[in-house]
Amino acid sequence: MTAPRLADFLSRSARTAPTRAAIVADGNSLNYAELLRRVSDVAGALTTGGVERGCRVGVYLPRSIDAIVVVHAAVRVEAVVAPLDVRDPATRTATLVSGAALACIVTDAAHLPSLRDVGVDWPAVKVGSLLLAVDPDAPAPDAEDGYLLFTSGSTGVPKGVLLSTAAVANFAAAAVEAFGLTSVDRVAAQSALTFDLSTFDIFSVAAAGAAHVLVPDFLKSFPQDLVEWLGDERITTIYAVPTLLRSITDAIASPSGVQADAGHTALPALRTIAFAGEPYPERSLAELLTLFGTARLLNLYGPTETNVCTIELIAANWTPDHRLSIGLPCAGLDVCLVDDDLTPTDGKGELVVAGPSLLRGYLIDGILHDPTTSIMFPDRVTRRSYRTGDIASRGADGRFYLHGRRDAQIKRRGYRIDLAGIDTLVGEVNGVRACVTVPTGPDNQVVLFVEPTSDGEVTVLSDVRTALHRSLPVPHLPDRITLMTSIPRNSRGKIDLHQVRSLANDIDTQREDTIA
Image 1: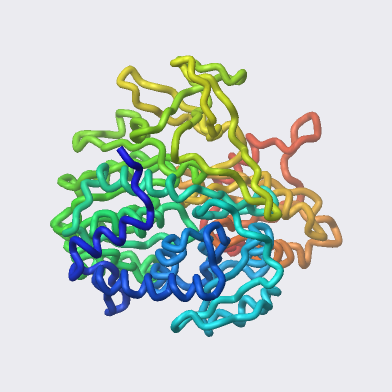
Image 2: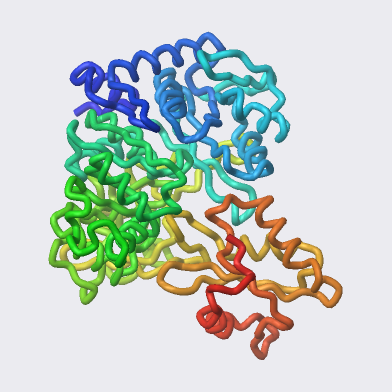
């Protein structure tokens, strides 16, 4: 069987259901025939502007119909698509552009000045209503197309995770089947284009011929309004991080919530709910099941480097008395557990993944680096594999269960954050003697403790905040910063993490040292 091509999803739906709604946003909409025409026009303009196969194209636009059109158009001309977030700090955007050696960037008149401010002073030409800024000194394009997503950079310089379009297509097709997605579905597309969840919103939806309904960003801060919007838009499917889903259930269950006493009837059209990016607190998951007992509930797992590699369909009678599984491997993927010697184990071990969804490599300073390892699987076949860093076990039914990380990285709100990387960044701020970052609570709230020098006490909090906001996107910022005269240390003079975690658990969440 021939693997699906990413560009074919849209073409097929435009052919089979040309008048069906494809994208809906802010009262505007495009059907599949209209979407394909706009994509074809932009693709032609990109080609005229010099974009060819393997050319690295940044998409510097707000989440919008225009942005989705450009993503599809870049895929159509077989470029390497690199979504950028217009809300990121300028220094991060500049780092991503140079680190990935982008050859050109599609933007609009409103956001071109922001690119100029970060040093992207390239000549720009019109691409319909948009602009194409082209680096006159860009290197020759790669031979292959691809999809480029970036790590947080909290461990240092952000890396570009380069996936093949075949890997994205493999996930998109698998998700259509797992979600039971059809052309009658209306999907709440809420993920940032820089986040791997967005590949479902864009490509799985197009593959099914469903409607991609953009959630206005401001609604995420007003859960009850979001619930009303989901109902008004007759949303049938949502794929999000647990943090957002919990805000929805809290809004419904609250005394002032929408149809609070009617349970899941508050959103009668919602039939599929999926989450990924971080563990779902088990008691909160039970509340979700109570409110949406008739919905199809899915737990998707996988780092950006593999996209989704396991899926669990959660049983309607699941309770917190049972551990939550991350499920079984997606079709075509091989997943196993290995010990410290990278030998397959039947006990707890590091979860490794092999198969068509793996990244091509990391783009660092414009050069592709392959982080994969050759590992012999239990069937004695050696495969190119990605080590996830997650410790897991496998049940008798073949399902996998997570038990934490090998390193200091955590998942919060769908983003992978390296706590040691935050410590490195803050430790370089003048006036900081010592610092340590720890997670606390079921939501992995991040607390940063800072011990100032005697001459840094007055300005250190402000300086730390400035350094963090300058270098990290908002989702990666600590939730709270606490100044301490002396951070607890053990008998060897090292910071006592046990004591620090205890302090973090006791901190009043309403303190004025909140950063976010």
